[in-house]
Length: 210
Image (cartoon, rainbow, N blue to C red):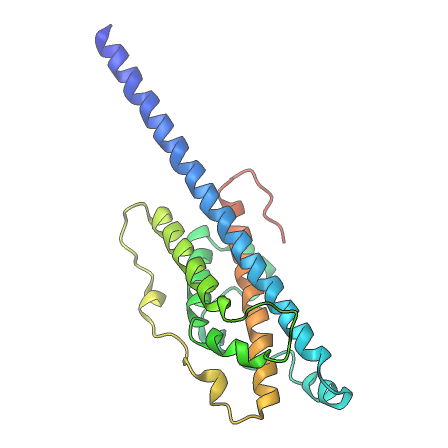
């Protein structure tokens, strides 16, 4: 009888620990989604404010740039459409999100110059800090998915895209700024999508359609 009570106690403790871990992971996922959603909204606001300050002819010329031919993150392997995204594992989506966020740590420092004339966008200098916080959160989620297993992802050992990509393209300052903002918005939209689907992957019964 005593042995049965001990076993029951062990099972109950294990269930409570697992429940607590699942609850903490859900909290981390929710925070990550909220953070990247804020960054995506901020990116959209930044580029809208930038475009509002352009002359009609400047706006017409820059409209030819998008859809973008090249972004700093284009060398990072990622799902190319909704179907591929939905078929990707939670771990894969987290790893790609981590790489995308990491690729913006240096370029984000130049965003303040791109929107220096905007008074409604907030403080762009805080973006680098927000990206760093999000990167840490995603890293914790990746470790949780690995559950003590070694990280065997080959992409983690690859060098990041060129840090000064947006500063060495030989374009005018106007085009550089527009490309920087457009690529930032594009990548934050990607990460938001990947994190939402990854979060949905945690529930096998969920419909993770985009």
